[in-house]
Amino acid sequence: MICMSDVNARTTAFITGTPWQDWSARPLAGDASNRRYLRLTGPDGASVILMDADPAKGEAVAPFVAIAEWLCANGLSAPRILLSDMPRGLLLIDDLGPQTIAEAANAVAEDQLYDAAVDVLIALDGMIAPPDLARMTPDVGADMVAITAQTYHACDPAPLVAAVRDTLRAFAPDADRMALRDYHAENLIWRPERTGLDRIGLLDFQDAFIAPRGYDLASLLRDIRRPVSAAQVTRQLARFAAATNTDPAAFGAQVATLGAQRNLRILGVFARLVANGKPRYAAFLPAVWDALMCDLDHPALQNLRRAVVANLPPPQDRP
Image (cartoon, rainbow, N blue to C red; front, top):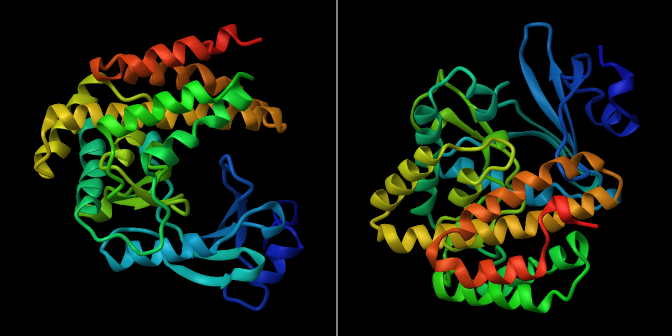
């Protein structure tokens, strides 16, 4: 039976009268959003995931459903939608598996895991994206880091925004590829019993947009929760560039630019989460800063590095 301490009236009503109503429930770790997740397990061991994305808390499930259906139609392993109440933000979806890449890395060779994850990105790179997605142009990407000046360190955002805009225009100007946006080890399910692209189960893609090539690769290789070895970064940059017939030197500068833009924004997002009553995100700030500095070490990004150092302190020096 469902443990009532793990559910509420919304989720109970959602599955009442369905084949899943008497399955046991266990909460899963949440993310930075207001979404909640439960794993429902039947007497035979089968399981599904219940997503509660309450619109009253600013959440929505329609983007998740649209992207999940698109991914499945294109041969990638996103959850199928088993039951939905879109207006109330409730979904019952496939359980893609119990183990993320981050968890599997304790027992599985890093090359094997990251080769599989990057193979998905190589396949995604060649697909025609669904229409009507937002585009991360240089102007949009630059505006996305204003939050960092506002919440991480109270300062004028204009110099930082301008430096990011100039760097994107120079090294990552073309928003022309589908990006799932939060493509990192804790959002990728490792499915070793499967083959090919099906070995990677995809989660947390509802914010997908159109970005310069390599955005998701930067997310994967500059993962603040599960650091990736320098050798692995070099290996996967080379594999992706070769598979997509991209100049390796130009692509390296592009991925470094996208990684820096992404982690600059994450600094601000995590600082806002801390201010909004989620103090655990403060512990991630040093790792975000280190990942940012690693990308800013790229010779092409020295102007951006100077702007960052001039305007933002490292986490240990914040007031």
